Length: 112
Image (cartoon, rainbow, N blue to C red; front, side, top):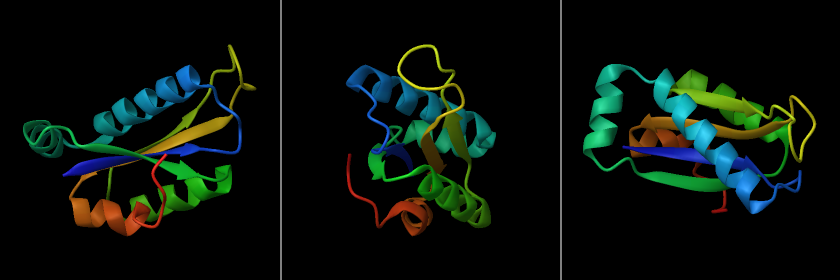
């Protein structure tokens, strides 16, 4: 079991903003998962990986793939209080889910 969080590289988020957006994505997708999946993932150590996404379009394409695979997922839009305009898509979390299924969606991406 793992979760992959894809953060955009094209919008110039600072390190703190990036960390916050990744955290938002992780928690939101976790909440989208069913109870059995949440329990199993927690029991296995809550494995996560943060990956690079080059554009908003990429995140939506990956979200569509996650949907087709039946994986919990969450697209995060920034509130716009600090560095970014309101509604800017910043990150996508895919999973938690079986490693192989998550990799079918995000396996071609580079580590952040």
